[in-house]
Length: 357
Image (cartoon, rainbow, N blue to C red; front, side):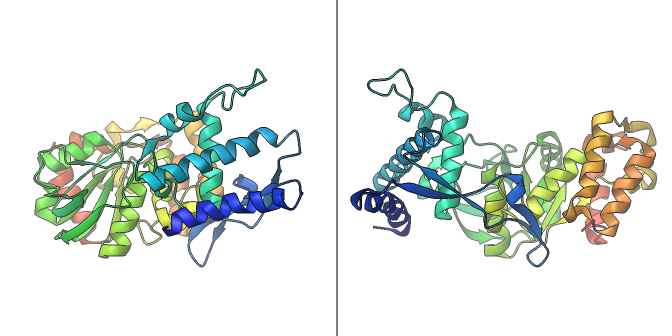
C-alpha cells in the first residue's frame, strides 16, 4: 500500500472508528474561502490559514455533503488501487445516482463533485491529480527537452510546431534531458505559435509553455516541477492588462482559490518580461493600444490592493496603466513586424533583465 492509499484509508478509518464507538461521525475540513487565505511574506506565496469546519453526519445541513465526501474518497481509493485515472466529469457521472427510498440524487451538478474533490485534496494534503483525478488538458510545451511519459520518450522540439500537449496530470512525467536555459510562459497560443515559427526556442535556449489564458493546474504543476527539479528560471510573457498580470501572479504566488496548493503549483522567483506600459513608449506602440473599459479599471484597482502587488514597481505599473487609460496586447508587437517579438523585443529585454518582479 502506497502513501496515497494509506492517507485515503486513514481518512475512512477516522469515520469508521467514530461510528464503532457509538459517536456521531464528523470530518474536519480546512476552510478554503477567501477569509482563510493570506499572503505569506516569508514564502512569498498565497497560503491557506488554519481555520477548519466540521462536517457532521447527524447534522441535517451536513449529511448530504458527508455522504458525498465518502463517495468521492472511496472512488479515488479505487482509482489509485487499480492504477486508473478518471476525468472530473467522469467522476461526477460515475457517482451520480438516485438514493434508494428518496427522490434525492447523490449529486445534482458537477460543481458539487468538483468541490468535494477539492475538500479531499486539501484535507489529505494531496494534489487531486495524485488521487488519479484529471481535468481537460489545455496548454502545450515546445523546446529542447526530452520527456518520458508512460514508457515513451521524445524531444518536445521534434513534435512539429504544435509541441507537446500538456496532460492534466504531470506527476509521472520525467525529464531525463533538458538543454534549455529557461522557461518562457506565454499567455496566448497565437503568440506561442509565432515564437515557435520564428525559432525563438532554438535561438534563445528557451522552453516555450503556452498556457492559453489562465494557466490550468497541469501547466502550473509542470512549470513548478521544471523550476525546482531542473533549476530552470521562469519568465512570464502576457498581455499588458490586469488579466494578463493576474495570470502571471498565479504562476508566481498562487491563486486565491487554490491557495492550499501554492507550495506545489507556484514559483515565487518568477519574473515578468511584458507586456508593460513602458513598452508602449519605448517601442512606439501608442497607435495599437486598446482603451480600458470600466471593468478593466476596477480590476486594476483591485490588483493594487493585493499584498503581492504592493511592490513599488508593480504599483507604478498599475498607476501608469490607469493614467494612460489603455491596455496593450502581445500581438500588438506585430505592428513593428511579425518577427519583431522573437528577434528583438524578447531577446533584448531578457538579455538586459528588464523585468518586473
